[in-house]
Length: 200
Image (cartoon, rainbow, N blue to C red; front, side, top):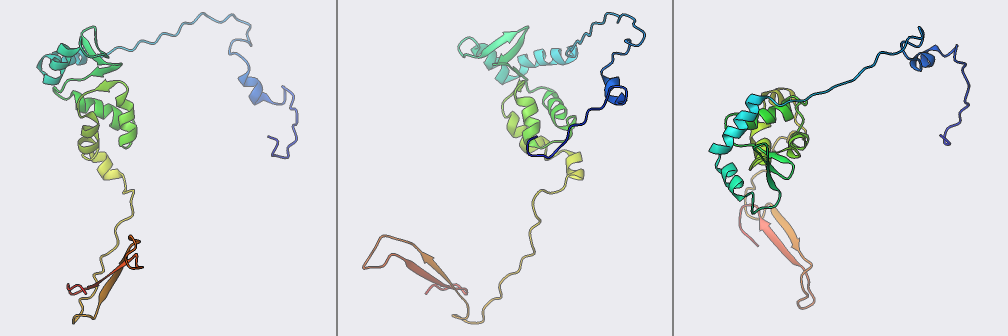
């Protein structure tokens, strides 16, 4: 605050009612004891979703290979029947599990681009080609994004083709190549191209 020229003015409590109200508990006016309160939060996974993941492990080829290799590869472990790579839950390729997770990470969070949508998924879930599926298939096919999001790049300008010359030598293009290694005191090559197609 040293860069500002300011004066601090004290406002008494009775005149500053807004700040005073925020510092008071709701029951302090009546001097009643506050009732005991306990906040409880419980997050549970849908049992149908869990069962579809467990059933998918049996039919998905990648998950079955991973389950057989979990003893020989570090970081692969099983908790309550669910496969993990590190701390990431392995999702089998069955039904609409991948699309449902993409919908949660992209649609429900506000139709963010690839980086934010992928960041919401990559720490908790894993399946082969997850990044490619999100970038190349799901986000480009999102109808809300196609309808509502504008282009982030400038539109290309109209093409203006150069006029075709009437005869050889009417229009030429010159280009310099170099510096090159010295040869007889020269270190550059000049190329001259006739726009009708013959080189000089």
